[in-house]
Image (tube, rainbow, N blue to C red; front, side):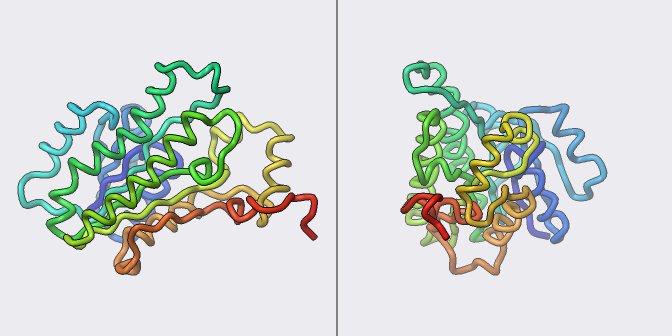
Length: 248
């Protein structure tokens, strides 16, 4: 049975990815720092194991690796999905706020990947890092968030180049606007209408649609795919040239 670790798995894209991997016959460790939400998430999921860990804390990541990844144990896939969203103007983003975003969104990906590399090497496994469309195209109020996600994209390519000789693949998925509970709560009707206008498919994505791309990259069907930055965004990134109002 193949095995995977999915971070930020208590909800949203992480939970959708874990469920798809479980449905495909994988054993999945769902990792999150929200213990209550995590325990709720795994109810009724066979071969799902919850593990409480804050990926931004090196000591917690090291303890996770020591407990779950004993010498010689292989890991078929690591999905680095854990992240925080913090939007605000540049002048209002003090260093503490900047670091809160970076330590989870970028440091966490580095720490988890480094801790899991020996296990991934043992079976020529896969790393899938979750960035964002905000790492591909700049936007207001995203100085920390967008920069952290751009860093994840480059880190992915570093991983692909260095770990490829061991058969380990590393790819990055950049979701566009997705219909999560958070988006439904904070996106006003005006914001949603603006996104619909700017996205060629004229809608938000669904969590399962993003998860499908992630699970493909974890699978053997993507055995020759590595070092790629894949936008799952309804075509949003492609609209960087031209104005929506000039489209037919």
